[in-house]
Length: 475
Image 1: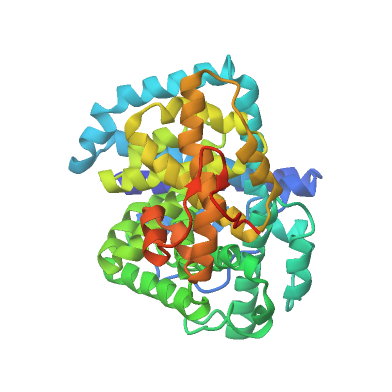
Image 2 (image 1 turned 60 degrees about the vertical axis):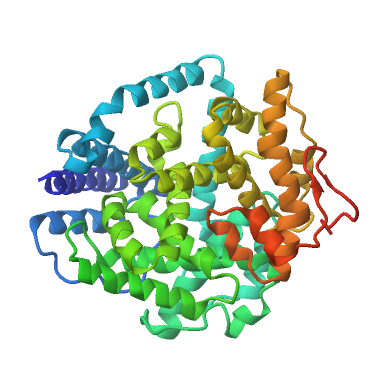
């Protein structure tokens, strides 16, 4: 009943938005508001839905593919909220406590954020929403920003050079978006979207890719495959069929990734599922947990990143991604992963305005049980940023930032931000790069322990000062 109601309302909402969009187009509305930016992902849809639930869900998703950016954002935001409202109204037995008993605490937390967002932290809240929206649009509309041809084979060397010409700060997302487009275009033109495709980032034009681009090109590879393959599933897809889809995703990622970058692609499945296909999140994670526990951990890291960028959470005072993680985590382990995964983009997206992440640290870092996850998310995202843009000037300025705050908050910033970011620059990135294991930062784990195991002779890092002891390894 719950899935049926959600799928039906979702379909009606998509149909309403599509009709409004068509009317606006007939009335001469501007193209940015009435035309979809990107073509549907390649590949066929799955078997005919087994029920009305599946039929309404799939029909809604096909309409979603035809929506312009503003309409698509509205659809995704309300779709998630409707799904959660249905879960609260019709809880399954394991969900009853999470959706009912803990609701008052979450509402109180959200009200506190709302008060801060419209009151003392209004400027920061507006700036954070603008920062997040900018990155969301940057990845989604990358073909426009990089002037990628809408048809035909791509000149990858020219496009990767163009992606790195804009700004150091935007390199991460421009390269990720390019990896997404290049993957789907090559998969379609060379392999006719076949499940047996191989070599997309190991052969042909991709051979000449600069090493610094590989983490996010592989993240884009995973985005491309996940977006296409999730067209095959609905909330009532049988477990065996879901297994086949996930096995296909895992195989495509393995057959088209370079050694040491597979995890970057696997993580993207969680982002695409959580951000764009929320109604099938539970089904995907349940099947993947039995199928491949390591890929499942990458999945949840991506799901946390997707929570941060999901349209329902673009304005945290309205609905915080941290509150959403509290709602959605099926276990303590997943909750820990989600907290680190939310700290990942919250850190990297707002590096140019560190006061925003300082407010995050002030609120969540003050709780001891959150600190390990936050520090890991900061370290992992900074390692990735330092790898994709060597000598990143924004990171260097970030390390020099001294909060204008009370001593205990300055201490939290040093412990949870400056120290892990310094280790990322001077220790984690050089060692993981040397051992061809950059994809390990896309999984929640103890990076100190991993680096100690790989290279026990690496000099320690004075993280509080933001410099390495001995030789500076940032160059």
